[in-house]
Amino acid sequence: MKRILFLTLILGMIGTSSCKKDKDCSLDSSSITGTYKVIHSYYKANSTTAEVDEYTTWDACEKDDLIKIMAGGALIFQDAGVVCTPAGDESGTWSLNGTTITVAFAGGSPVTESISNFSCSGMTIQEDLPNGGYSKTVLQKL
Image (cartoon, rainbow, N blue to C red; front, side, top):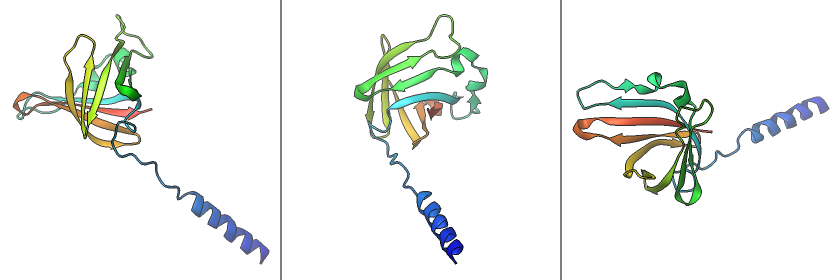
């Protein structure tokens, strides 16, 4: 009888400990901060062309780069791992308005992209291009 009671208690403890509430991952300026890595990059020239997976054509030195979205609007693009020649490190700023992120690197024009599929583990960002085309990037949060 004690053995059955002990097993019941253990199973009850396992059941309640495995039901922890998931972290709140609603998109806001706090939850978006972190370090990301590109895991897919797609391009579609216009509404009549097929989507192309550009990531497969990237050099190894580009596939391991990191994007650091920091609190306060700072952004760092780090040429991590295998470093390209020349290195591609850049810094800039970011701002978030709903599901729209605007990124600006030093000396460049701001780029506005929409965010979809946001979760604790990553997101998809898309820049719409003329004629129905787009550039879409899938980021994994590290």
